[in-house]
Image 1 (spheres, one colour):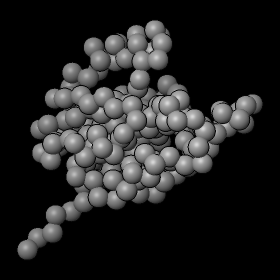
Image 2 (cartoon, one colour; image 1 turned 90 degrees about the horizontal axis):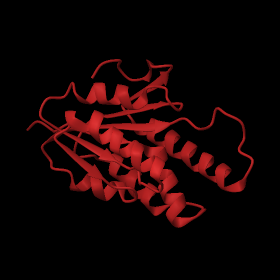
Image 3 (tube, one colour; image 1 turned 135 degrees about the vertical axis):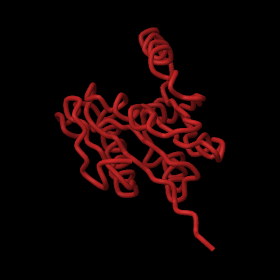
Length: 182
């Protein structure tokens, strides 16, 4: 009897406007079949509502379905159909910001623990997008430092479990872990 292999996890990380989402989408469209876009952004203000609307209009058409989940990422991933060929999650740092916004500064977040447990045995191949937030200056206030620390720890944990990690630099993908192709 042939064992089913664990679905692959690709982690795309980089700075703001480094081309992370565009590259992740270009990887996702290489998969035939049912592609799912899992969006974490929450429209807290007019500018964010406009960003989300532009993104929905211009970029999500390549995906059969979109799931919007700002807090319960593991639950949303578990609810995706088993036959999805790829699930793109954009973005983990936005998700972490949502957790901080809704729950405040906590020592840990159960949702992150549940997400990391899900990644141990995902049911679909995943492409995860996140911002690298630790290469700038040390933030000047406790909440920003808390966010930076938790986003950094999340990124480290995801990179450890991912099969492939791609660092985006000025729109150029640099594979730092795993094979360079899907």
